[in-house]
Amino acid sequence: MLSRSFRSGIVRASDAASLTVFMSTITRGFSSKGDSFKPHRPTPKSFREAPKRKQRHKKSNPPIQLNAEKSSMGRMAEDALKYLDRHGAQAPITETTLRAADYMTAEVGTTEDLVGERRAMMDAWSPEQAKSLKEDITTFIQVEKDKAFEDKLAIQPKQEEDVPGNMSQDDPNQKAFGDWSINVIKVDRVQKVQRGGTLVSYRALVIGGNLNGCAGFGIGKASAPNEATKAAERACKRNIFFIDRYNGSGLTSDLAGRHNSCRVALRSVDPNRGLHGHPLILEILKYFGISDCSAKSHGNRNVYNVVYATFKAICTHESIEDIALKRGKRLMNMQRAKRLQI
Image (cartoon, rainbow, N blue to C red; front, side):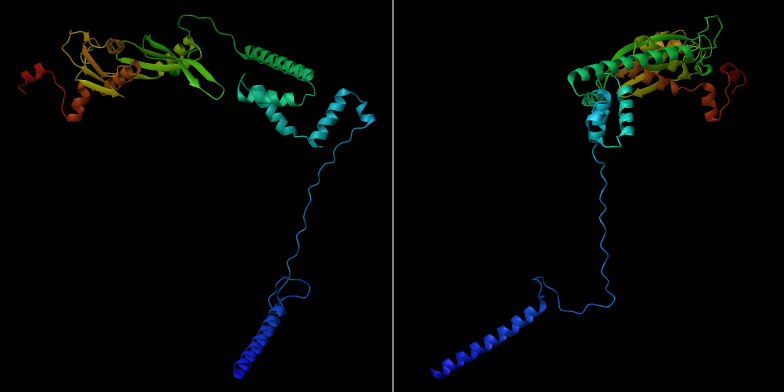
């Protein structure tokens, strides 16, 4: 028993000594001023503390204080001082000007128009002032529109009288060779959804030709039907196609054209056979001066698809001279070939 107790006392003493050494080791690493831990290692001589950055404080413009003298200058001066007090000494002049320009040039009812009107009403101090401000802006815009319209009329030159043979008003690039006739195929009312609302316009399809191997088609859009038709006529004279007719009235071979799901077939027939088939295709062939042909259309026979497919088929036409040149042959009359026994 004695040896066991003596042995346990020695163990307790050794534990206490080791605990004292461990605590002294730990407390040596902490500073006496605070509880923060600092590692016990020497600081290198090349160590330099980074300089502290100076914080720059933005200078805010002090609000303008209204006193009795300034307020006695009048209502407009008092409103101006209140505006400067709200926005600071430097008011956003450029941004305000750009917003005003967007508001003045925007259409009625658009997003820019509503935003500009709301911003203008924010500067008013009473409902009466807001109402009068809105009336003044509306009057100013109307006056500027009238002035711009008058300036446009003053700049626009006077139109010359229509004299036979006077083509000075027409663009020379829009003229077609020979007498030109036009047929309006269809005029549609189309709509386009925009951010400000639905824009309604008209689309016209026109075909034309000189009945002598030259024809074309055009599509025009405008805000009115007659303007759309005129635009389609100008496009028709710019978009022309040429064809070399066989014997001045027919085709040299069968033709085929396709646009979307519409297929058009043009078959060559004997002379003096006439035109047979789709009415719109026959109308196009008449403007080309073709009087002997049989036409057939398949699929979606929309007028736009039929016109596109027909002109694509005509573009593939080749005259007898072109075919002979490709084959390396010389074109010769059949009677002459029989006479020469070829």
